[in-house]
Image 1 (cartoon, rainbow, N blue to C red):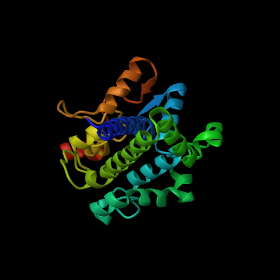
Image 2: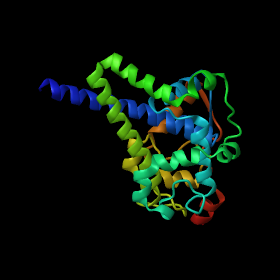
Image 3: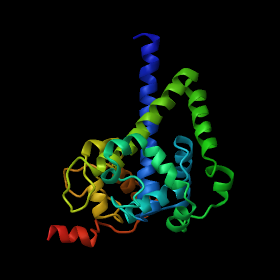
Image 4: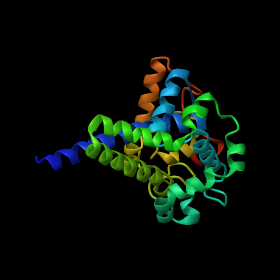
Length: 253
């Protein structure tokens, strides 16, 4: 293969690996641990998760948590930050970042939905500065792999991460299976890309459960990470099994 082809192939692989790491931290740390308290992560691995999120996405955890909790409080009704039922799935897919930022900038939303996540010394020095984290993450890729490969890998990662997470909010409330009576859907192919988040109907049926796979044929890679962490005593589970909401139980009766 030519040098250009090699560079592109390498950048694709690196970008995919970085996105997978970012999606793993998003689902395990931001979503299942912080937003729903489905598991408690010990301080050192939690710090590692925070660092990876900071370097790969620049996301401030309390903002992500607040936006997501508001989504659960107003799922697909007026007040939902990113409902395809209200806005159309194409609009949410295309404008997911803008919709997220608009809600994350609402002081009252942060105060109401993330009051259990006050800033600490790590936020003051590092994690509260999102642009610094993103910039440093790109610099690390450039130093490790060279300017061309590093920048291309950052570009690939940004597109994969943003598109796949937008798809959870857009496609995951429009296309797919609904085994439980809620507006979200299950898309296994999206679950592969997002470390389990594509099993979105299952999540809305049991939001406080750490496992998103409810059937033997469903695959939730994030659950594999969580099980490994619990085996190594790096995390503890809130519930050892799936806890369906009352609405989900009623839909099965």
